[in-house]
Each structure stands twice: as C-alpha cells, then as structure tokens.
Amino acid sequence: MFGRLFVVGTPIGNLRDITLRAIDVLQKVDFLVVEDSRVTLKLLNHLGIRKPMISYFKHCNNSRLALILKKLQGGETAAIVSDAGMPCISDPGEELIKLCIQHGVEVVPIPGVNAALTGLVSSGIGSASFCFEGFLATDRKSRQKKLEELRSEKRTIIFYEAPHKLRRTLADLLKFLGDRTVCVARELTKIHEQFLRVSLSEAVRYFETTLPRGEFVLIVQGQESPEESTEEEDEVDVKEKALELFKSGASLPEISRLLVSKKMSRNKIYKMLLDNSLAAQIPPSSDAEGVNIPSVDDDSLTGDNNKTPGADRF
Ligand code: SAM
Picture 1 (cartoon, protein in one colour):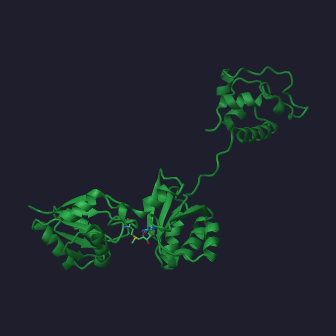
Picture 2 (cartoon, helix red, strand yellow):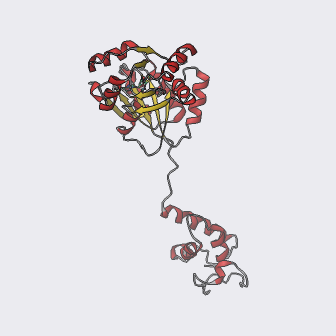
Picture 3 (cartoon, rainbow, N blue to C red):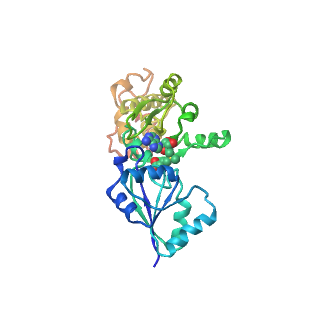
C-alpha cells in the first residue's frame, strides 16, 4: 500500500504557532521533504524531533522528485514543510503534490500559519473578497503588465515583498494603482511586529526615511467603485434635464419616459415634476398655466397618445 504525503504548515516567526497536529505528524512520518534543511533543523531541535530530510526546492530535478515518489509508493509516509508558513504558497511543493495526485499517493493537508492571511485579517482592509499576488516580477515589462492589470481589480490585493525591494514596490503601486489605502504588515508574529495602515503615498514617504527591515506583506485596497450619487443629487440632475426637455417642447409623459432610469421610476419622476420649485422655473409664456395635471396612475403616463399639445405640461 502507498504511503501518504502530509503538507504541513509551520510558523512564520513565532515557534509557538505550530499546531498540535503538525507536531504529531512531524514525529510520526518516516522522512521530511524540506526547503532548506538548516531552517527545518532549527524547528525540529525546538520540538525535540530527529528525522531524515530530503531537500526539495522549486523546479527540483526530476530524479529528486522520482526518488520521493518512489519512497511514497513503497509505503513510506512523508511530510513536506517549507522554511515558513504553508508549503506551495510562494514556496516549493506544488510540483510534488501534483505528481503524488497523478500517481495515486494520498495528499493530506495539515494547515498552519500563512503570512498573507495573517496580514489580511489584521489590515482593516476588506477581507470578504481578495486576491493573492505573491511577489511581483522584478523585470520591468512583466511587472508593469501585471500592475496595469491590477489597476481595475476590485478585490483586496495581497503582495509579499523582500525588504530591499520594498521601496521600489511601494512606489510602483502608487504609480500604477493610484493613491489608495495600504497596510504594510511587517514581521508578523515576531517581536517587532508592526502595521502601517496609511495611504500608498504616505507609505512611500515613511520608507524614504526608514530603512525597510524584516519581512513584509502588503495588503492593498482594491479599486473602489465611483461613489454612488445621493437621492438629492439624482433629483437635481433629473430636474435640470426635465427643464431642458420642457423648454424644447416635450410633454410631461414624454419627459417622464425619457428620464426614467434604474435610479428613478417613472412615477417618481412624474411626481417630482409637479414640484413647485420646478414649476417656478418655467417661463411665464408657458402654456402650462391652468392645465389639469393627470394623476400619477393616469394612463397618459404610459404614453402620450390622445394628448392635446401642451395639456400635460407643468
Ligand atoms: N509560505 C509562506 C506563507 O505561507 O506565508 C510564504 C513564503 S515566502 C517565500 C516569504 C515571504 O512571505 C516573505 O518575503 C514575506 O513577504 C512573507 N512573510 C513570511 N513571513 C512573514 C512575517 N513573519 N511577516 C511578514 N511577512 C512574512
């Protein structure tokens, strides 16, 4: 019978963030698949665990992958861990997991901490809908293409960034996305944990005088929809347009029909057109004086058939 591959989350700073299940699995498996054996050794020493390790990195050669798969197919169990957080999230793991699935080796998740989600939930920026972009490409062309694509992204956007690239990334975010809210989450779960919840331009200014140190997650506000107009603004707008139509000779039902929109029903427009403040703007030469205004429910509102010219003007 085949063994199993456990995908184990490890702490992103604070070693106490390891889960009980993770400790259990690390103790029980036959071997570990690790990103960097020196980093994992520190965690194992902290937990008092000794275990054989096979190093595995992104785009690992096929013979390394084949060796791991063979061991699993031979019935051994393994846990894949990265240097910090969840494997496969801006870390190696994906190729091995795909390979296991293809060859019928069971993959079992042991969830743990992840920097992106830890940053997001404490950012104060919308978490109902978000996208994770990881590290931005460093070459100018693909970076620019990605940022242009992201300009209209409505969801909250999460990036990872290394300290020596932070200033350039903040400046590019400001340039391509405009001045929106950002949360710069630094050294999460560690002693110097810090959150800078500001606008992108303020973040750029802050890091002009502060040297970026440590690890960073950037949580950027998605593009906001243009502000909804208020009911009063809609009314002013409709009144102005109505007056123009009136001056050009349109009848009341015509005006109601022409101005109907998702925002304002025909009946509402009609009632509004009867408003005194609008009537006061009608030139004295208007033929509206002394006419009978049909009721809102009047059939005339569904069209302007059988109307005496000017009879339904205000
Ligand atoms: N697999 C990890 C995870 O699940 O979050 C991410 C690994 S990725 C190679 C490393 C990047 O994650 C860092 O450059 C930084 O952007 C972010 N990161 C990791 N630990 C962090 C921490 N404690 N505080 C802030 N960002 C962190």
